[in-house]
Image 1: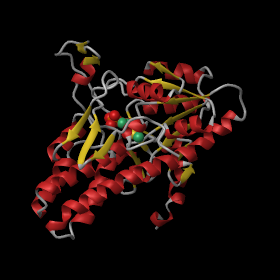
Image 2 (image 1 turned 135 degrees about the horizontal axis):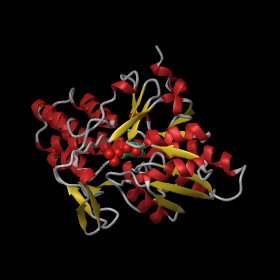
Image 3 (image 1 turned 180 degrees about the vertical axis):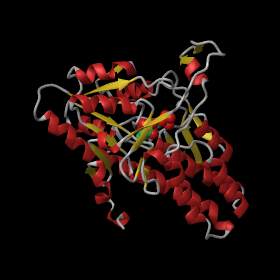
Length: 351
Ligand code: MRU
């Protein structure tokens, strides 16, 4: 099966690492080269690339770029520190850096550059394969609903957990792409996701793929869920604790609450690289607090406009934690289970 989308969030061409700059979307489609370690760190911090799996993949490439310039132990350690400090919540960042560190540290500096490149390629290939598998496991939830109703299956999502947030396919949107390929009619409710409006990215992806969708204000979610307009919700994750608590883009928990009230399935789709077995529950997940300017301004095709005076205090927590009890199923590349059965998919993690 080929990729269901026409763009590459990150790719390698003739030795160069190219990213699709998501701060330009949906208004302009601009590819940029990551020339060095600093460019990779900047891309993650400024959200030119974003979404947990793509952050991990970009960090892997950032380390490869660093090793091409300075493969010494101190070069490796300072690159790990720089990249590791870019964003705190998506555990895929730490996962990718630890993975490359384990490969590179035992090697002599002269062989690190090529080994880092090869491992970064593997991280990307594995992300694509994991997300494709998530699509197939998640498709079952959609086809089950399709079998019992007329018309399209109505999926609500939050933020962008599509292909743009990964190397390919996406996580929450992988089952939607799989449904489209399988000929199962779907319609996607795309939540705006203030303050950075990642819903615009989801709408752009859905438009590119020809998948019916409707963009909506975040505040409309409970109304739509409560009025029978949503068959299931699928969101991604930035970190899933060992007990199944899920950190995802702020606003996710409100959708889960509405789903619990009205009995609508609430699924979380994420690759294994998003699971944090060292974190027993959601209380241990660091929540990124971003600049208040993201709340003070709204960005559009013609630039940003200020909507609240500069000296008005604002808060901007970028993620929230949805308790495991509100999640119907967690879908990984290994299958779909209730959150309290997550370790059944990972027997190697059982004591
Ligand atoms: O701040 P962002 O845009 O990086 O946050 C992204 C999300 O919260 C996504 O839902 C999550 O990373 C899952 S991506 C497949």
